[in-house]
Image 1 (cartoon, rainbow, N blue to C red):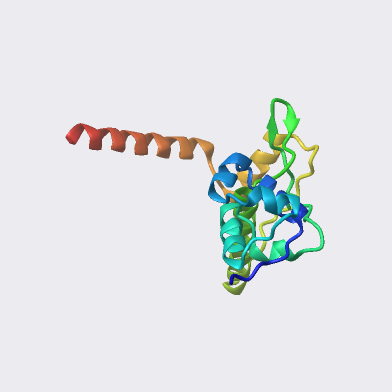
Image 2 (image 1 turned 45 degrees about the vertical axis):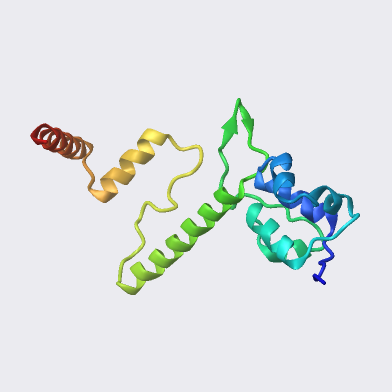
Length: 166
C-alpha cells in the first residue's frame, strides 16, 4: 500500500500554472492529475516528488497554507507586446537567485582581499541621463571605448585568420 499525501488542490494547480507547462502534457505524464486537482484523489509520495520535478516546484511548497506570490527580486522590465510579464518562470527566478548568491560571494571575497567599493556604485538615479551615466562609469574604470573597439577588431581579425588557415 502506497502512502498518499494530502495536498491542497490549489497548491497543485498553482505548481502546474507556475511551471508554464501545458496541463495536457502534465496529464499525459500524471494520468490522475485531474483527480488530484479536483480533490477526489491524493498523489502518493513518489508521485508528488515526480510532480515537483516536472513543475520545477520545491517539494516543500506543496505543504504551504496557500500558494506563494513569487515576485522578481529586482526591477522587472520584461514586456511582451507592450505588456508587463505577469509571472516569472521558475527558471528565471532560479537564475536571479544564483546570480545574487554569486554577487554576494564576490562582494565578500573582494572585501576580504582589501578591495574597496567603486565610487560610482549607487551614484546613479533612475532619471539620470543614460549616456552621461555610462561615461562616468567608463571614466571611473579608466575604460576607453576606442581601445575596447580596437581590441575587438584585433580579435575579429585573429579569428578570421584562424578560419582562413583551416
